[in-house]
Length: 466
Ligand SMILES: Cc1ncc(COP(=O)(O)O)c(C=O)c1O
Image (tube, rainbow, N blue to C red; front, side, top):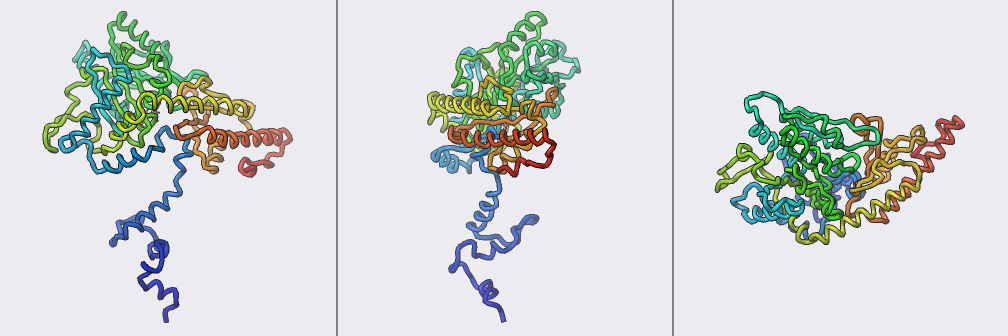
């Protein structure tokens, strides 16, 4: 005879219980093969939704630059347009028109001169934008160099502070990578270093407005001056591409007089991540050229199989329209004033946090003068034998906070840092809670120092004081 429980399992329980009483929650979830039978939509949703509780909390993610909050109206617009393939311009012409409006706005934000014929495109993020810009510079160099028959390899000069995508570009597209190493106490690309590395085959200089490692800014205007002099002395007209992935949506609002963009004579292209301080969910980025003449026709493909002839300059083909439209939403909704208020708040919170962390006394700052809402710290020398930034990162993670620890690129790889990226939904009160946790780390360091002095090596563990 079947037991009571078994009998229940045989019955249709749908009307006697909620979703957690259905058989799907006591069976293994398919992991390796597509299941033969499907399942009800609410069950599929709940199974996946619940499993994702194991992910970190995006609101406590101080590692990522990428937006983790948008307004309800933006989310509505995103949901309404998820079904539109951006590349299908013939079907969705209005989306294409809105896209052009955003390119106009960004070119203006980056001070593209009126006399130039600027151009631009949305991308999936800054990585695709950088690849496209560098491809354009490679073609331009090839088509405009003096000795067109030479088989010299083009080179690209950049600091070791660049994002990995720059190294990828050099490898994927067969360009010589001239990487200027970092030094202790100098984590940016400086103008004097550029001078030593360029020649007639330099197709572009890569500079960063807000490095991934420390949030600092390369010497962009000084590098521009060096290139102006080289143009006169050597006749080499070397363009600059500015990687403004994080800084491009911050600097124009908090420091509009700071010249890093198309106001500089050699800056010919700029990328920015819409999904970072453009305040849009991933993935949208932008590449803007000072003039369309820098994009060779050879790189633009015309396709007609979606109806109408459509030019494409992208690495991928299909992508969603939603994030492009969400970008437009933010530009209309916030305007210059709205973005400025948000960016000013971010900078205020960053300065507040920097002061508080300074008061704790455990860390030194790599970027004491913060220019973007990014703080990078290393342990003070006297605490290096007590703890590592990797342990601190792990402890913070166990408390919900996501703060990455990593070593700097060459030649500063002996320096290990923690980086905190301040985003719009990180309030001052959240900063206070984080500081409290970091103060506990300091207490631990003092105890540990005492243990080391008295050789009580196993006495304290970072994890047993929480
Ligand atoms: C300076 C810099 N450039 C490029 C990228 C790559 O950007 P995306 O993630 O938008 O492709 C990043 C990402 O953090 C970055 O910090």
